[in-house]
Image (cartoon, rainbow, N blue to C red; front, side, top):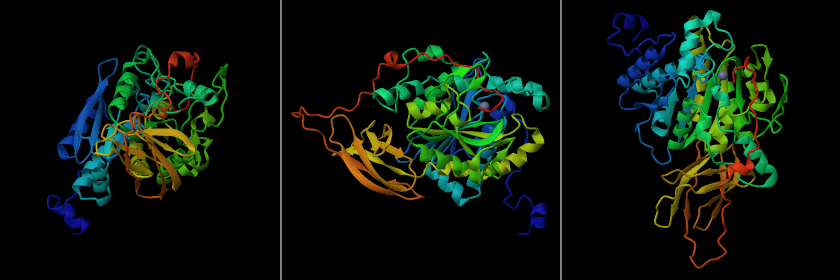
Length: 452
Ligand code: ZN
């Protein structure tokens, strides 16, 4: 049917509701999420992971063909925005993304339908709703670099996660694990309620991939954020490329976003130059106690930090253009959760083995299987030697080829060790006594002009 006829017979044509590009205050955000849920009740669920200082909920909208349920071999993905309350673009983009996923699913868009059927997508438009209200009271014209950035207690939430980098760097020198590092003993007293809620959330879902949306630059930033010799002299900070054992993977994840974005990959943005539109965090500027390093060191999740706009609080008229610049990238990045290898770890009777260790020869960073025995190991295309091990079982090793597209399925069925065996190989203890290993590091004032 022609566009003209559709305009006349709008009711007969399946025309998606026009999306409105405007700011959403707290109540407006809740309303927008419930509008999406009411339009797509069978593939969405709204839940709160906790409350801010001032009692605002940290809401999440989940997309899945089975909302509320983890289906084995379906990876969990998350987007978090507005951790800095005055960096508002990510918040609006995630609301648009939720509306888009719902509409396209209803329109039988094959790509979006596949994504929702094979992925559990969690979207949190605002991690710092208190800061947002402060910034929004000022509006885009007068908003400086700092107003509303921090939470109600004036704490920068991206400097508020337990510092596991120090443990990791110590272990690199002296031996010890480099993944699934435990929380320090008194961590709950050291974090803000918003951070506490996020950590509980991370403990409740086996997230595989994630992005944290910021503003103030245009670049895809990947771990580590913290240098090994983190310290500052006055305002001068040391910067040096600080690679994770998964450097190739993180680069490719950052590139996936920047090249699907309309101009991030050009490199020149906001007066900075980043080749390919990506950067290692610590080589840009070093920051301690950030969220992305914490994800990588504490859990299975690979997280990057996306800086999406030069202006932290862009005017309303720019929101639509920004949505079209980011839409493909936001979808492409979710699709990155479907690569590498995945499979089930079971015993001889096909019972799931949770917390089995999946290790890759040459990459000193292990992944653990989830409650249902499924594991997800993101990898760039190559040939890998993979070992699955679990306490009380004989380890098993396999060689696998990973291509650029669909993840390779690799299941492990482990045999119980004979009880009489004394030579049982002990896995390295993950119960590291953090008190002995954490050097005290005083957090320094951050480079607040930038987004992170
Ligand atoms: Zn930020």
